[in-house]
Amino acid sequence: MKDFESNNGWTRDVWVFTEIQDHERVLDGALELLTKGREIADAQGSKLYSIVFALDAEQYLPAVEQFGPDVILYCSDRALKHYDSQIFPDLYAGLIEKYRPSIVLFPSTEAGSDLAPRLAHRFSTGLTSHCTGLSIMRFDEYDRSLLVMQRPAYSGNAIATVICPHTLPQMATVQQGVFDRKEIAGGKPEIIRLPFEYDLATLRIESLEAPVRWDKPKVPLEQAPIVVAGGRGLGSKRTFDRLFELSGLLNGEVGATRVPVFNRWCGEERMIGQTGKTIRPRLYLGFGVSGQIQHTASIIDSEIIVSINTNKDAPITGISDYVVTEDASSFLSRLIDRLKREKRVQ
Ligand SMILES: Cc1cc2nc3c(=O)[nH]c(=O)nc-3n(C[C@H](O)[C@H](O)[C@H](O)COP(=O)(O)OP(=O)(O)OC[C@H]3O[C@@H](n4cnc5c(N)ncnc54)[C@H](O)[C@@H]3O)c2cc1C
Image (cartoon, rainbow, N blue to C red; front, side, top):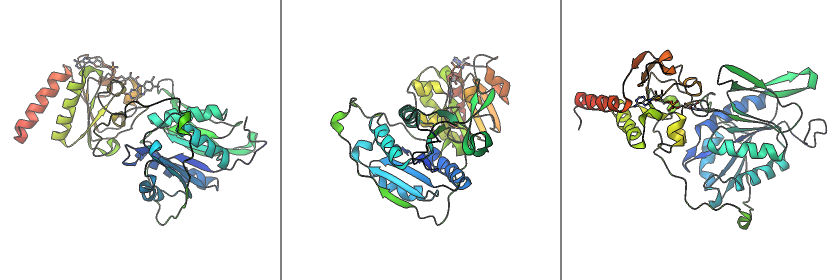
């Protein structure tokens, strides 16, 4: 057990797993986490580290630098192109052993949610998942400052406040879209390239196919003024795909509940809710969405909510400004036809 008392060289540094999305850009949630990490590191007078593992990782460093890390540790190799449940935890654990940060943060993505618990297990420490609040607070009973982690509990009806007073590092996965992103002018972090030293012959899992690449939102969902979201009630990927037609006509973006993501009708970056994005559009249209708290807690600040559901008593109707009690697929088709007529497009 790595405890505070023996210290064992643990620093007060804050680490952020700076995830790369689709080999294209730094995940927004990671930039939000760097902003929050900066605040935490400043509050306790420690350093903020950004950890980047990717193929051609150098290309992402300028974007990362703008969010104020003191140090960027990066590793670049073809084997890091996709998240890997063996390579990433092995490399990351080695770095934690060497550098000894006391706070280690991850975005609540598929990769972050796989990596964080594996590391928590290796270090026999605690992990708070899907956090929506992080701060530093002094605890006299432990004679030290600790990371205070908040997360929804009891299906979102309560907020749990969690601390990890006896073991290190203190670890959290953090929901995307809950913290602001703030660029910091003029920062010049120390940049350390880590050699990729991994015996690929030890890999126990072989990927037979690359992950499917979905159409990504053109605008991050958190910033889209109109979001058309689909749920199980759309019934199939084919019907779900029509949401893209509608969003094109409205200049909006397509979002989803967890069901279409799990059914592989769309990519994870479109998921709205406790384990996805928190959105505040001017208009939210929910097609075949029941309105479970894990979804609705993240749409409640939308200016106008419209729900289309065959069940007039579905929970989402309780928070809707307009309710359409109808088959989602037929209503979607009619709406598309009507908008096309009005816009005179084929
Ligand atoms: C820890 C945890 C985290 C979670 N995180 C998330 C999250 O981040 N985001 C998220 O969305 N969910 C999340 N969930 C899942 C969540 O609890 C719900 O299961 C999910 O949101 C339901 O999705 P849905 O509304 O698409 O499906 P359902 O709840 O199955 O609802 C389908 C709706 O469609 C309606 N319907 C059926 N047929 C039609 C039709 N022909 N036309 C119109 N309407 C129709 C039904 O009346 C029903 O209301 C989480 C759950 C857990 C336990």
